[in-house]
Image (cartoon, rainbow, N blue to C red; front, side, top):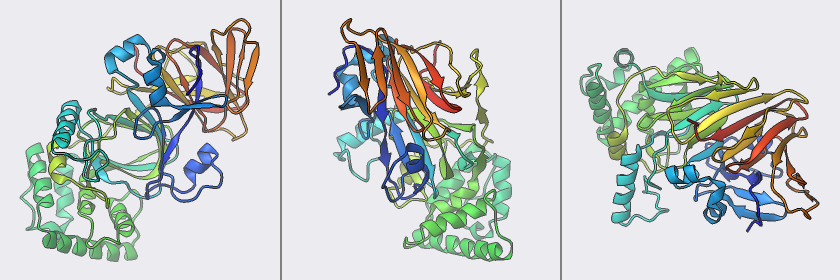
Length: 435
């Protein structure tokens, strides 16, 4: 448990998800992890009880979710009244292989779904569980490197043209009309195919694509490329994964570094390959539709998915009144992501945390430093205290927290601070929107 008489920035140790689709190199290099092996898929930076970060001050440590329960003042009264706790979860994600096709519920769907699964007695850790909590999960992904993603159904007329190029499906699926209800009937008809019929369709499709790929290789910009990649990853299953066909119905986009995409509730999506920062409402609710050996619930997915065909808009950071800062605006009430670019020797303007903020240092030499200089109330006889592990000093009424690449810190509500960079650095900052 942390001894924290006064609110001040705290170093955060992320926790890692080692899913099979994760990249073996990106996150270990980003966070400076030594002597680790195997895929590292996600770094969680936040207070979700499933995998809360560890807050560190000197030699003391405490899970962030437990600290915030014990010290709700660190959140601020307004945020607690609106959300009850820290409303967002920050991640760094690195995918070497495609993730599942999935959707996330809205608030009402999450609340009713969670209650329903509790009533039927599903254990919290059951593999059959769809709803881990009662919250919705809008999310924003911003690429750190090139990132290929599937997001939302393609425009309705475009889907009609796509189906003409999939002769394997002719006669097996409902006649398609380019309307939301027509798209729903198409997807429902496909997901309802008998196992043997679906397997035959996919095997014929894969055989044709593999021959075409040998004659003229597909590129990552082609949907067929990812059908073959996903099939290769999932080739140990008894039959081709039912989600392979759905790839053709979704928008395929390539995010360049610094570009983002917002995924609201009900929008089907799958992250295919790349690395980026991701911020979302503090939820872990996922409804999977394919491309995974994990639990798939197509019936629940059909209830939650939005059958709207449109091209997704890319989100580019917008300038603010601070020259070093850009903001990625979304409709989400729970979070706002900002990017702060500092040149060597630069000092940002003074900032005041209205509600808590989480900072993450990216894109700099592993030995370079960013210093959080903050105003902190300390006891008159506290003197100079240096916490060697965290790089934190408090001197008089001011303090400093030293960060390196991959370092994250929690800024409590009401703390004023500025950022000083020894070398060029990029800092991603998450907070709740103001105003």
